[in-house]
Length: 486
Image (cartoon, helix red, strand yellow):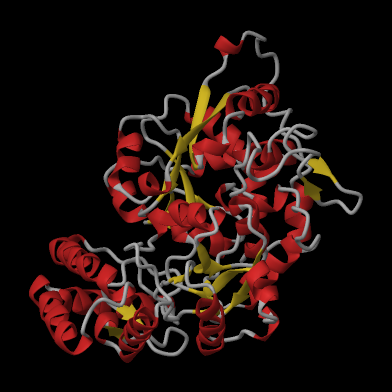
């Protein structure tokens, strides 16, 4: 029988559970405890008090899971490259952010966790339904569990409120890229010293893990297509070309990629940019405002979609190099259920890094701001259960319910739950990704004469083997749909 998906209220209630009964009789000397490490993307310049916060977390994990806990700071760029994989291989990380369950499980980088979940992770099993658990399962073996946060994906834009108000622009009236373009024209025409926007490709599609072969009509069609030769891609490239010629894009050669998000936030903090496109979610405006120190408005520009990899790319696993997998699972259970620990990770120490408001939200203590705080993690999407974290001032006190509803109401791709095994076309797939990477900067910056460059780009992709990858992906997807009865 399929397990019933719990509501946000049940998730939050579960967060009040304490796992102190897991074990008893441990020594008080901290050397008696195994230390479990998990990597987190942070801005280290705003994490000076990490050792102090970590000490408070350890008081709780030692008592409740008989294990210490270490937050390993990594940069946005490390999280997107093989440098993070090297930390896994070197045994520096115990609780792993799984990037590819197929690759990491088959290479023996992550442990099967079925027995560990049954013995130490019962609370996790209560929080996740069968569909969510299936995202972390390969060949009937559980290798990871998905984080509880926004799973669906959509795109939006964050904009400086002060400039919107200065030019009497109502952000509630922005519903499309065309609406936003009108805003860009108004702001950039009067603020020539400020970059208008950092762009992203925002086509609503299922990337099927790598964008080398995608579903352009993901709710209704299983046809795998070449995104880079689609009308959707061409229209966006034309738009960026037009915006560059109008002076809306950065003249400093800024290239917006996920791994450069912190650089982008620094530009916003310094007042050098008006807006940037984002992967939208409820509460993104407050999150980005807290990180940048600028009051931002955010609007959604595309409808949310659950793609093939939205859950499988949000998995937490246990490193096969972990010296104490049992302790790792006990700590992971705490991270899913213990609100004290979650709020220490996310917000720091109450009274020093945040204070509670009368309405249940939190804010900075007197004299503390985003610019001078000594602990500003504020990336609760990295928590195994973000619903445990307090809501920041300005966000809705029902933010958790909004995120849960956002997930539940999102359309679902016909490929939802599909894994692409690139083993037989890995060389071609990797070449295609390299080709795309070489061209995308120019498209995003609007530098290319599209009539000349697009045919060359497409030929380079064909030479790299994109047709072979698409054919293999189509074959596997057809088998998946046939076997799943979709």
